[in-house]
Length: 135
View 1 (cartoon, rainbow, N blue to C red):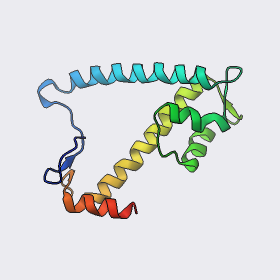
View 2 (cartoon, rainbow, N blue to C red):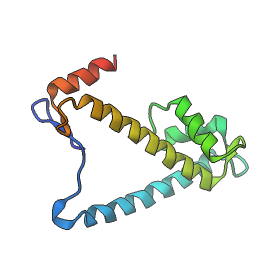
View 3 (cartoon, one colour):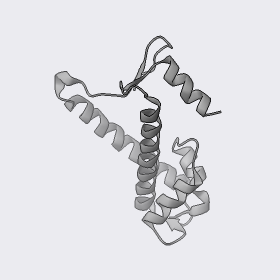
């Protein structure tokens, strides 16, 4: 979404209606490919003997740009991918994607709960409520 001043609401992202979203889809595909290459490079930096160990995931996630890592989510996603204590490169990429999807869904839930009037944006009062809830 966009950021705005307190006088401007914060909106969820939307596709460009003039091109049917095609330009954004192409850009998104390019961005996804770039992210995946980056994750593969990170795997190479963190892996030992061609595997990323479970205990090294937090560092790999940090290098991948994932902030505020949630251990319960890490365990949930890891266990959904493998029963062994490490990930190969393909499973590592799958792990990062699944974790980021989970994180995005949770953020969307928080946004939707904060959007009290259902407008698709947060006004100053709704934003203040979110900030207070974060402590």
